[in-house]
Image (cartoon, rainbow, N blue to C red):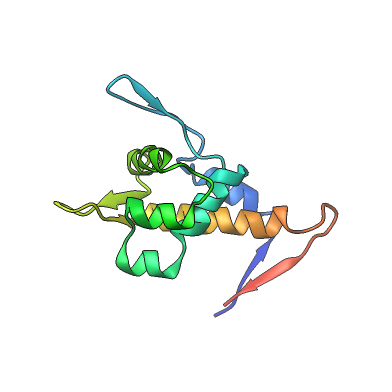
Length: 132
């Protein structure tokens, strides 16, 4: 089966799905901001979340630190907290391991698709991508 995604129609599909990237969450008086898919730090976070070994084995604070060198070790835990509050990852009981939720997979794939479609291409270029 072949699916066509046209660049001009993709953003409306992402906006209509109401991804948890633009809203803030408030828990116990603390505000946790959403994710900006055009921000370099958030973009690199979602690239790491889509890595195969993390999808299979799950992710931990230590595994994120190995792949996200631009963050200090003390900045990784708040990232995990934000991901959990927005429903992107889910913690495995009695462990320090997390897995992507179904919503998390959709958000991570949307982030990578946005990067490939809009940030890598030149501004006037319009293409049709085939996904099999």
